[in-house]
Structures are given as C-alpha cells and as structure tokens.
Length: 141
Image 1 (tube, rainbow, N blue to C red):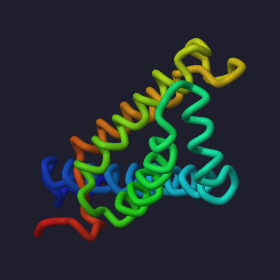
Image 2 (cartoon, rainbow, N blue to C red):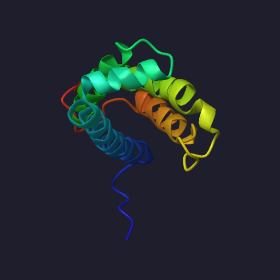
Image 3 (cartoon, rainbow, N blue to C red):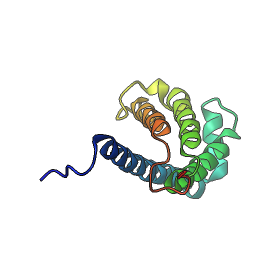
C-alpha cells in the first residue's frame, strides 16, 4: 500500500538523502581501499615511481594516495562532501587522461581504458550536487 501521509517533496528529499548516503558510503569505501592499496601494497615510493613512469612528477603519487585515503574517510563520514567529491573528480579525470587514456575506452582493454575512471568522476560530480545527505557528520540542520 502507498503511504499518502508524505508529500511528494518530502519523499523526494528522503530519497535524495538515501541516494547521497549510498554514493558517499560506497565511493568513500572504494577510495579508501584504493588509497590503502597504494600505501600498503605498492608503497609510497612505488606509487611515486609509477607516476614518474607515465611522465608525471613522482610527488603526485603519494599526494594522490593521501587524497584517496583522506577523501574516502571524509566521504564515508559525510564531511565537506561537495568539496571532496569535486576534488576527487579532478583526481579521477587525471587518472583517466594520464593513466588510462592511451588504453582506449573499454576498461577491460590491456592497461585499463578510461571508461571506469570517467564514470567514477561523473558519479563524484553527481555526489557534489547531492551534498552530504541526512546521515552525515557535515549535515546542516
């Protein structure tokens, strides 16, 4: 049965809050894991070496790792969601251009194409528009 006690705007706001939470929690977790892999598996020096191997300054490797870890934690908590999502969208577009651009579109191509990081960047832009959502530390009441 349909609950007619909620108005359409209230229902839309609740759904937007749920959508923001799902996007924040899932992408925040993915960023956190991705950054921790760079830290614990590839190590900061190995990550810097990879960045240098694709023609970027080595310091961008550890900075990217730090952005992924801290950004992931911020997204999970819902702190500065809009700003963090925009910053991470820029990181992802850089990954698409510099790390995956030469491999073509499809991410299943050897070297991973640019489709996945661009899709993730678009997701971050949508999250920047949604904001923190209801279940967040940063929510303004």
